[in-house]
Length: 408
Image (cartoon, rainbow, N blue to C red; front, side, top):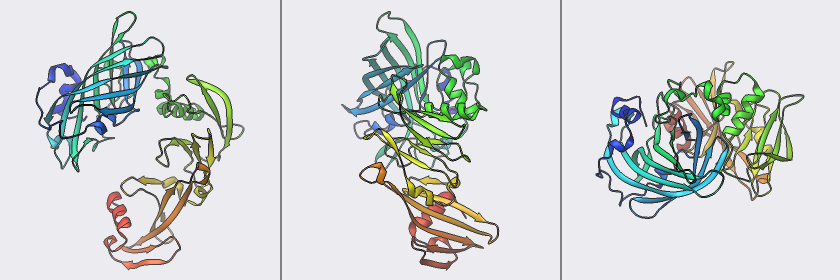
């Protein structure tokens, strides 16, 4: 939700309870909002109580029960205390936003909902309840979260504002969360363009978040990032520990609660680049990747409970510039050669085998541009299009890539 705009700023200072309009500009009977409610999970930021203890919320599933009611199952994490929960999210109203406030070329809408999620296991359980707000748009007859300005200063969305009530003591605590920013977070949020927790709240569960951004110690920063990106709700997810000396390795451990258990394996790395941890093959599980030109790629196998090396990653050219274009379902790298004064673009696809040990990165061709003249080669080095003066004359996938990245 783009709170940098005046039309939405009221959401930061007024309770969501006060903005219910009781009408439906977008008919909830016509559309399934599951995708809107699932967006950004599990990387939402949250607070619990006046001391701003860190709260994380993950939705495992959202299921439509009626035109306005959705069943939600997931997990909460209050500074390390993980509890499963389930409950209901109900649509209250929809209204129209000003698309100019979102720099959008389509209609933008606001959805208000109420929610009640009861923790069903773990220690110190309770119930989350309150109001939530979502900015969305409709594409191909499907509601989508409005994230066109994701990464812009002040961006936020999926804003939940309410309370957590203890089952045992009936004490109520503030419990708010959202994507990129947290409503009602007071002096916790010291960021201007993006959320940055005040260092004085580190002991309230924010240490890893803070260290992942600001730590000057490479080991501390990498391990904080590993924990920040881990599947904390998954009892079978590995625990990763990066060691830089005497040689860079990652020790992979079984999970014991939220801590590390027995050592599973040790992965060797290259000296020249720190490891990253992200879903490289988009299968829902994290991979370890090094973007240096001599780096490695390790893919996690949930079946075998260990990482496999993908040797074909060694043949990717200029890994440091590797990007993924979901619209094209391809990876691309770029390079500018000063000696030839030409731009080079390389395209790859990820092929999954019957198990991660058979996964492969497949080179699919390249394009060269010099002085506005383009040449396209296939994966075997054969020329497909030679000396064309516009990328529109290249294969459609290359034209789309150049258009998306504004490479011209």
